Image 1 (cartoon, helix red, strand yellow):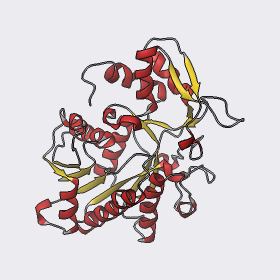
Image 2 (tube, rainbow, N blue to C red; image 1 turned 90 degrees about the horizontal axis):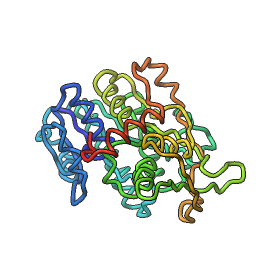
Image 3 (spheres, rainbow, N blue to C red; image 1 turned 90 degrees about the vertical axis):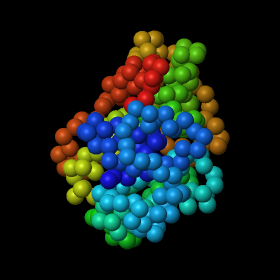
Length: 325
């Protein structure tokens, strides 16, 4: 059996979609559905069982035989809000929970893959290379990033970098993110805005050396993330360490908006609004994943360009009534 924590979430359900496409459904989904719409991400999918995150943590901490024979654990369950202010909650939910699930997987002799984040890189003063020697020097700009950084530091402290994989996801967009509200990708927000007003609003730049909308990100399509995770889980258990997950390309928010307009067959109309004070001091102006590790592993698939990914997302999901993978 495989376990996906956060399996009803954005990236988790994309991984389940990829596993199902490979004929694999012996999967335990661990999540906290509560009253959210995350359950909709599971409707088209096939899996063995669902378990609430608290029950799973209880059983995993006790190494309970009720969890059966676990071959691999992909730990994607976490609070993903970059604006979450409750530091104690993030410590417990993102760091302690991750640490304990890792211990459970290792005790079972199971493959363990953890979701870290590009938010750990802070303002990028050390670049975006995933070298283990740089990890202790990184300074995240928000508590969310710090909670992810703590798990990466714990992996290094426990000398587990050759035993587990911790993946720093960059800016992921695509189907099944609809439940995320204000934390949805900019692509999803722009699509809705264009439909309502025929224009897109982006943050103005707060720096004189960067024009409005030219702030850059490494935008990565969620289908590519699901494919990579399945490859690491099923085919390359030997690939471990703290690794980036992105396209290796930095594209501007203007590029992203233009791609959405193009997929909707509309002419671009972009306006800029001042950045809110709450995030202005903690804003990343540039990210780009160094993906040399994946090139060295001869990964057999290519990542979508922003134009191809956005076209698929808009035309085959956002613009259709049944929007889910």
